[in-house]
Image (cartoon, rainbow, N blue to C red):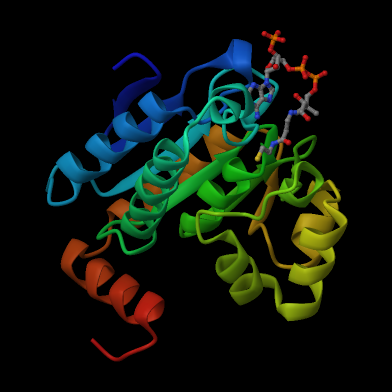
Length: 216
Ligand code: COA
C-alpha cells in the first residue's frame, strides 16, 4: 500500500495514513486503499479493534486532496464522492470498534473520517473543523448527518456554516471527542487492550444495535 501503513500490536490493527508531506490529505488512491483494508479485515478474527491515525506530528487528515479534486471531471467527482461515502458507511457499521486517534489537523474529509469512527481520542494540540463552505462545497461524505447526530443541530450548523476551526478543549465540551490525550496513540492502544478482553460477538452485536438504533 502506497499511502497507508499497517501495523499489528497484539490484536489491534493500527492504520496510519501516510502522506505527511500533504498533511495526509485524502486522495483517490488513499480512499481505495482504506476501503480495501477495512473490507479485508471485517471478519478477521485475529483483530479485535482498529485504530486510525495520521503519519507525522502535524496532521490526522487535512481533508480531501484539494489539488487532486480541483482537476476532477464531473464523473470523477461523483465517483470520488461515492467511494468516500461507501467507505465511511462501512467504517461506521464496522464489526469491531474503530478508534480515531486524532493527532493533529482533522479538517473536512479528515473530520468526516473521524466522525465515521466509533470513538475519537484527540491530542491536546489538534485542530478540527468542517471548512468546506469556505471552498464553496459542503461536507460530502456523510459528515453533515454524523456531526448533527453527535453534537446536535445547533452546534453542527454553527460549525459547518462558520467553517471555524476548534481546539481539543472545545471538542470535548461539545461531545465531539471522548478524551484529550497527551499521547493519543498510547491511550488508544490502552483502550484497545481493554476492548480485546471482551466477547467479539457481543461487541459486534452491541455496535450494530447502537449504530442502527434497533435491538439486536
Ligand atoms: N489537500 C491537498 N494538499 C493539502 C491539503 C489538502 N486538503 N492540506 C494541506 N495540503 C498540503 C499543502 O498544499 C502543502 O503542500 P506543498 O508543500 O506541496 O505546498 C502541505 O500539505 C503542507 O500544508 P501547508 O498549508 O503548507 O501547512 P500549514 O501548516 O501552513 O497549514 C492547514 C495547515 C491545515 C491549516 C492548511 O494546509 C489548510 O488549510 N489545508 C486545507 C484544509 C481544508 O480546507 N480541508 C478541507 C478540504 S475539503
